[in-house]
Structures are given as structure tokens and as C-alpha cells.
Image 1 (cartoon, protein in one colour):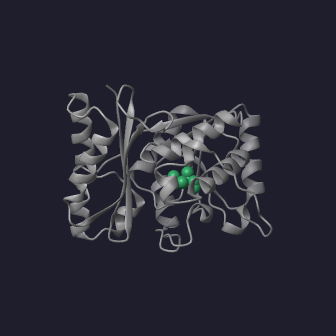
Image 2 (cartoon, rainbow, N blue to C red):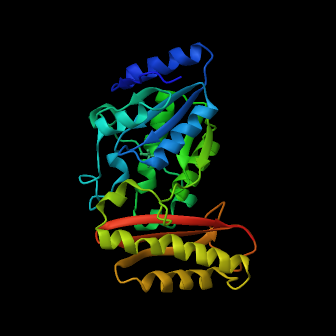
Length: 286
Ligand code: PAF
């Protein structure tokens, strides 16, 4: 049964709301987002509703995870549209605080998850995962969820959060959901809205090259991480509108470097189309 969600903008109110739900013996399933919701987010909400007894969604564009030259100001926002989309789901509360509520004057703490944050997006976007870990830990403290649901398109983010939860003994089950894709394979992302029609058409090269590389690994045609990385860089480099930030083949669990592929690996990439940076990944088990 769907109920109209309560729109909550203050930390104290959100905390009280969640405490009251837990006091009734209900387990909160939490979906943290930055809004501009698409099908991928809605699948996370669906998954959350199958896990807990009370679904809470947060919508907060977190300034701490954006670098000074990044797209914080132009990151797409549409709170009214998001609330309309969520109305079709059994969400009990939407937490959408202003920045000053979560980062008041005098705020000076950062959470750093070390090794797993360092390669890939951590190398291209210094401090990004400190910002993610800090806001997610704050949200976990405010909401007190039994379950928290994240999309696996942000594979490294998922591993960073899992590691933080394990290392800090947080009592929350972190659940990952498969990437939702457009019919041609492009991973759903709030940033897809920035692609020109030509860039949108070209961006299909990301999922198609990941699929090709995955098949070549399974078939034994690519057996080393450096071969896989060359293969991906060549395929994507052949698309004139694509500018590779990184392509990488790493241990799927630790994100550590790999030579010969003998364990599950994640093929991860970040590629610019114009000013828009897209990420995607594929986990390959042999
Ligand atoms: O994946 C996102 O949307 C964000 O990184 C998150 C987890 C909501 C933290 O701001």
C-alpha cells in the first residue's frame, strides 16, 4: 500500500521520525540519492521496499563529493519531479535537507576509507570518496537503517561504503542493485541528460566494449589485465567523441591491481563525452 511520503528537511525531525518507526519494531530500508531520479533509482526503491518495513529516501546533492572544477552547480535537480516519481512507491519519508543542515558553519570532519578509495575515480577525483563516505556515514547516523541500497553502476562507491561499514562496525546491511540500462546498453545516469544526440549515440561504446572485453576474458582470448585495458582503450579511443579518463581491470573485491586474471575482476571506466563524464563497469568471473 502506497502512502504519501512525509517531506523532511531537518536532521532533528528525520532522526525523530526514524526513531519512532524503529520503536514500533520496524526496520528501515534506506535509499540515499542525489535526486534527478531515473529508472535506476526507482529500482533501488523497489528493492528497498522488499527488504525493510519502512522505506526512507534521501535527496541531497552533496557538495563535499564534488571537486572545485566539477559539475556541482550544473548537477541536475528537480525535487518536484522526484517527489512525483516517488509517489508511486511505498516510501514513507523523503529527507531533502538544505546544505546548511548537513554542513553547518564550523563543519570540519572528513571520513576517509583508504586503499579501496585510491584507484579509478579516487585517482581522477581526489577527495571524492571522502565526501561520499562522510555524507553516507552522517545519513546512516541520522536514519539508522537496517538496510541501505546502492546501485552497482557506482561500483567503487559500493565497495568504499561496504568497507566503511565493515571497518566501523556499523549495524546496516549494504545491498547492491544491478545497473539499469537503456535498451541500447547505456547505463542510466542523471548525467545522461547533458549528452547531445550525437554524444548519446556515441556513448553506447562504453557498454558494448565492456561486454566485448568480458566475453573475450571468459573465452580465454584476454588473460591479463594490461591486455584488457589496451583492448578497452583501443575500442573506446576509436569513437571520435569519446575522451578516456581511465579504463582499468582490477580485482573485483579489493580493487587492487591484477596481472594474470585468475579471480573475478571488475572492468571499470570513466569517459568524457564533451564536458560530461560517464562511468560504467562490468564484473567478470572466469
Ligand atoms: O550515489 C549517489 O547518488 C551519491 O554518491 C550518494 C551515495 C547519495 C552520496 O551522496
